[in-house]
Amino acid sequence: MSIFLNNEFDCMLTDEMKNAIYQAISQSEKAKINIYLIGGIVRDLILKNQIKDIDIAVEGDAVCFAEKLVQHLNCEIISAQENLRTAKVKFPSGIEIDFASTREEQYLDSGMLPVACNFGCELEKDVKRRDFTINTLALILTGDEKFKLIDYFDGYGDISNKQIKILHDKSFIDDPSRIIRALKFKKRFDFEIEQNTSSLIDEYLNNINKNMPLERIKNELRQYFSIKKQNIYGEVIKTRAYKLISDNPVQDFNYSRLLEITDYELIDEKDIWFIFICLLLVNDNYHKEKLNMTAFEIKVLDEVNELLSEKNIKLNDNERIYKLYINKIDLSVAIFYILTGEKSVIKFLTALKQIKVLITGKDLINLGFIPSKYFSELFDKILKEKLKGKLTKKEDEIKFVQKFLKKQSR
Ligand code: ATP
Image (cartoon, rainbow, N blue to C red):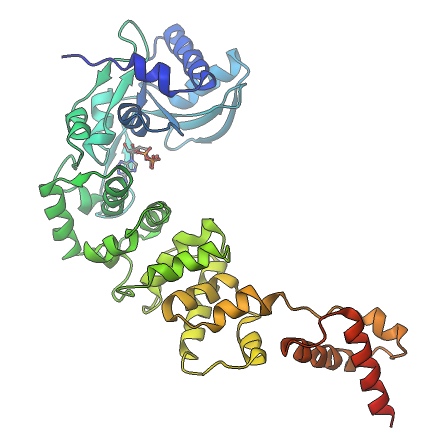
């Protein structure tokens, strides 16, 4: 039985999206090249999820196709990958569409990036390189059968049965980042990982290829840990997927402390994924190069470790709390709190951190001081008083300095 998704196409896409796709369709019919909506967008149309990205497979050369769109319409190619024959095109309405030439992929070395070949091949060959049956669906755009579903692997059935299923048994050996993708789709859609797929995940995790590059895995973990649902960390521990990047993760953590930190708006939401990465890596020798970590990420991990080594110091006075945290990145301090529950962190982030000396060097000169390195000592003295809860106003600071000056001149 043929399935057509005209209704879903009409209801789920904005007018701008539909117009852009129709412009691409008209070009494909002129050029007699078949194009298809492919992958995540078709899955999401069926699931009636919000559509964010539009991917179109071109049974031909997608870069040439994109150039035609630029010639005939007011479109712009905003990026192109010549080696993969893909192009991102911006339409006059601002809508962006990713065009990719159909292709096959060969994994010459397990876990390494595949070699792409046979560009412009039939769609059926292209879908065989994909990860899960639910992501193999395509929607015909060119010709008389518009919006007809092409489903070589019964992806439609698996969506209906909420199953995440790989296409062949070597899938995770070829690309272990698919393990994290499986967890991502499971969590995002409340699906189950099909039994054989789940056994193959276990099998792979018992025999990990230690030479594999970790960049794609990190990228998938970033997406996975950005899902706003409970127990996303626990799932990585329970399934042992952590083994892809760490031998010794923090096994458990206090979720309410994470909520507390986010409630206080002490960290940027976009950094939350990295908190989980830190929990995985903090006990381990993190593979800085293999994980392609940024200087910021390395600094946060190093600072968390530094703070953990000071954990036993009882922090009861404000000055010590201030000195310990003030030169650290907020995210490092927040992670230290999540790991230890050290209350001084909350005191620092919510109150002490905001304490600033109000008078300036100019004020000191006006008060009769001659500029010298003594200024910084003076500022330090004022700060100490403020951390004790004194000198809350600028006038108080001025009075303090004047008193200090008198004492010195006696
Ligand atoms: P999302 O909504 O997270 O963007 P998506 O399915 O669109 O989900 P993308 O990462 O944008 O995911 O990938 C687009 C398509 O490329 C997928 O639907 C899938 O067919 C294919 N794909 C992506 N990553 C892999 C992979 N590691 N192995 C095989 N196929 C993949």
